[in-house]
Image (tube, rainbow, N blue to C red):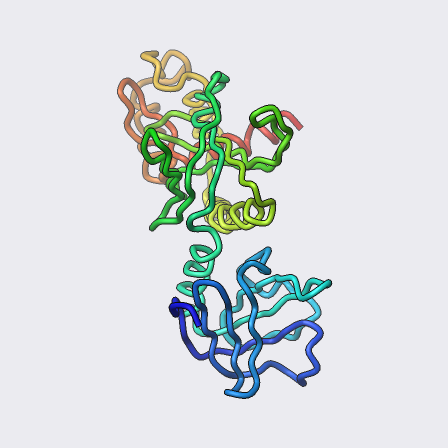
Length: 290
């Protein structure tokens, strides 16, 4: 087997398996395969080239719940597709999921347009080649001009669209992220639709956790109005008291509250939105425009 990246005890259940209930054994991840071993004579080998999705949780509704923290791996099995749910303690599954994403994505050639937009301004940036890697807390695209790093904590939105890349319509990930209070958009395409989907899933799991945490934040109407104003004015040198039609002490109190909630940070002239603040504003604008 190739170099072992992860090896831990756990349980697993494969959709459509003849086994009655989940199997207990070892989950062994190599550079090119995932092996689920109930015993020396009973094991299942999944080539990583067959994996097309990795999702935290038990997404295979046809499988019974298995004790432990689950992650679902979807893969092609001959001419069909199936899933396996792997469970273990939370720490082991978290490490396994991270290492599995790295094994699937690191070294993937990409075609990158960065930045495609700054704020609302579309740029005529050319697409260029690069190599994808997942590093602690971020996605890195190594290009001839140097690395392009997108911290996961900076991502405010992403989508999958069809764009023209070097004269050909191709699926791309459109990633909106913040950089020192400035909103940027980056486009990334891969030759493999499978790899692009896995990258999208990797970004989605972090984005979903952020959305879940933001649902716990309560905002007053003046706080929401202030966030929308900061979104509109950016880091321009304007008087917030005049724009908000509030006295300085009230504005100071609102800004302090937003800073405490992690939605704004200091800018050159005025406070600017953090990535979480931008997400809150995006959701607010969607509600207003619906």
